[in-house]
Length: 173
Image 1 (cartoon, rainbow, N blue to C red):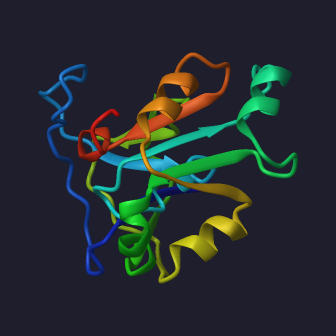
Image 2 (image 1 turned 180 degrees about the vertical axis):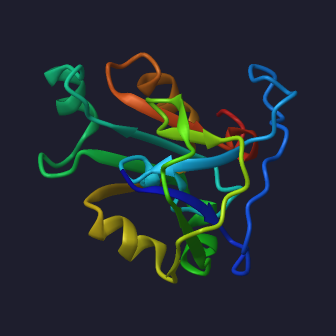
């Protein structure tokens, strides 16, 4: 299994565990966060870019796949708002890869793994064209005026999903 940390920072040499800000996690333990390669497309955007992402699983209904994917060859969708298109075109991301030895699963659907120990990346990959990287990973990219309607539909679907940075999304219409 390959695990990554995605950042706009180019010079991270060591990842020290940090106390999580999420209230549903133990705030007495610092964590280093990583993401699986399968869920990596969820994070191939600028950090604060609101996005709705979803992908097919064995549990996804044929109706949901038919309704929410425009191509049978794609198994993952990333939707962003129009106003983030230029920002995304001009953002460089750094993928820090970790050995998976000291990580444990935190959230299977989201692909989150965490470690309670200091982590040193084994490799750093540079992505200068986020759209090309998503296309190489066979991700369907949607650019919409507002994410909320899509979000409301996807959370009721049988698809696996992740909604990130929705606090930065346009207001509902």
